[in-house]
Image (cartoon, rainbow, N blue to C red; front, side, top):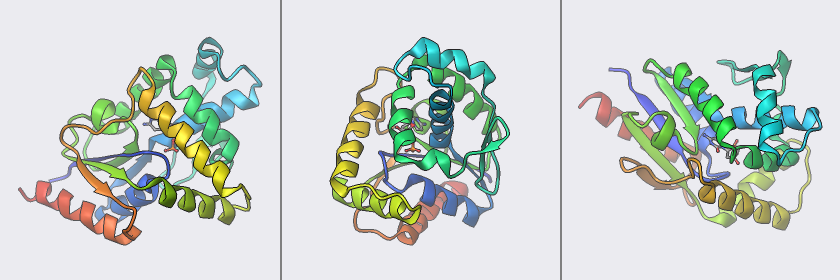
Length: 220
Ligand code: DC
């Protein structure tokens, strides 16, 4: 039986990397919802509007067409933005636009539509609470601030971006605060979630743990 797997968690908890691997192992489709908020932020920065203005950001939404391809590439109005949207600047801007209810409502409709059948691994902040509350396997990933900052530091470094570790740590704390304290769909643990602390686990260990939890549901 095919199921849906929802993976929520804070910044740099490893969600997308792990969700992608879980999907590959099951032959499922991975949907990285954070990339969609990043596309909105990218488009807003490109349009040079006031990123803090909900009305200005939401006015752009009808003109924004986001595509998440099975190979992991992300297109925004037919432009490949896969790498650009991972920048430090867009990470911070995405956290700002993700607090706007009009942005969330627009993206949540698209996300629900994308995963209306089974066989999806979707990661984000509100997947198990809002987007797919009926997901059969619900995971909440967490990790210490130190290990998350270190991961993000290495990730940015591998993309040729050199940002001070302390700045990354502060930004992560600020984004966590934004994500957990916004009024609409704050990051929280859904009542059916399995909480996994990945601080001292390898990616493959986490993937195996999620696969075991998923298989328990599939073969129940
Ligand atoms: O997971 P990420 O870092 O790529 O997410 C980018 C931003 O989007 C982050 O600040 C939280 C927000 N987000 C959200 O509010 N809801 C989601 N389902 C996914 C991401």
